[in-house]
Image (tube, rainbow, N blue to C red):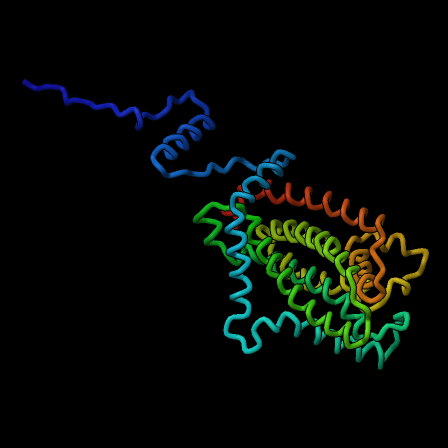
Length: 312
């Protein structure tokens, strides 16, 4: 006499009915996984919204240790097996300073207001190299680490931001050389240099905005990485690095200062060589523009984050 095989139904293996929505099925799977000690991350469809910004910032705060670790990794890899080591952070701006000094003192002249040209150009080269270097390295960060994007979840903005923090460390090292130059040329040092902190923070925020935008586009269109060196080279000559703001005609100066980078670099230079505190309205404009651009680019970055692993 045949008997029907006994069927044991395990409620944990029960598949939700067909009529249940996809979102509910994913949530049920996530609950089962968490109950078993294996949390999973459900990547939602791309969405461009303010809510995505705040959600992304909360998630980024939870992964702050990963951001710190990757930033240290960038620095260690960059100077690994090099004879000069971390001194390379100061060698690049020094080499550019010597080159521009020869060109703009022997071949042509630039009005510096009586300030020796080496310290004049070096005080602007430092923030510019920080800004341009952070962007140049960040943009290619995502495409250089496809395995990380396809095999594990973490906020994708951590990769470009880690390059930004590494560039900030390089800026701190090169600033030591700036202090040495100021002492050599008898430029007075004082507490007014603390005004450099908000200037650099705003500049870092604007660099993060540009880096997030270009790195998100670079995932789909690799032309960005090819065109970026030329773009940064042209951009350098549209901000007061090798020349002073006074060299710009007065009728164009208001349009010229619409670029926050120009206003921030000029403020940093005036602070360092003249001890002049930054203009409050200029700093407020640059800060407001940076916050607006950063919020927009971060929302764009988060909206494309869900499909990065598919197209990279």
